[in-house]
Length: 346
Ligand code: F1P
Image 1 (cartoon, protein in one colour):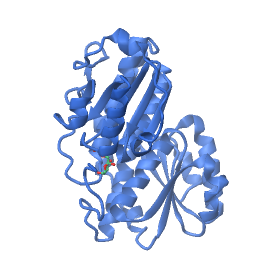
Image 2: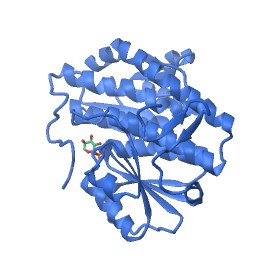
Image 3: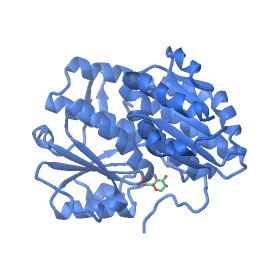
């Protein structure tokens, strides 16, 4: 986190610095509305960013799929900031949205991995993710680095707007600095998720449910599964189940239920009870210490504890592994899924 991001942590001061930011802090603090525009995995990172920016800075954020955004007539004011997120920096729809915004004189900040890419060159501001080359088609480390960039940007914005105290920022930084070790331990301890993935071999459909940040991560887990294992999969906000999706739950349908957010834990448990009552086989995700969840589900994966706002960086790891092992179990080429290109430039 400290050394590789275009956004950095000052370890002594426990503050975030954006060394490459060209605009003044006063200008940044002035923006009162943010559009985040991106495609695919990058858009899912943006959904995490939305919740984090709104919570820490109180600036309203709208996340838009770039391929749809270009048909809108967006309501820009001179206090609107657009953030475009693109691993490759060459995605056609994201570039089109960026160019439209520039025509309306909207300030655009990019979060991208590729120095010299079109998105990097054409945006007013850039935070590089420095995630190294993404070799496989399906984005994995790009997501993590984009989410980290969004956390750091949000903290910086909170600093300049004064919406968080220095102590609150320092607390988040302390937790962020512990994340790499926690990810390493999760990667070493992947047997349970591999076993669950292998048990999906004959399965034709799999559902993810979650609320709030857990829902945002569910969307990415579901996309990874579709992309590389070709299992039909959907992610739903758990509270929406009874508005239709519950009809699809029957005996032995696998459901991955994320329950990492303490303030809505009880509501998630009642959704899990609903799908279990229809025969679903539920793999739950909870934070270490929250050992109660096993009473409501068939299997649980416990994740290292961190701040609730930071859990997406951890939760996505076993979800990516689930897609990976499901793909391997089916004998598929994990790195080159059918029909997909690394960069969608047309
Ligand atoms: C966006 C994206 C990727 C996905 C695939 C197709 O790319 O949807 O998230 O994995 O490779 O493109 P980008 O704009 O982040 O480069």
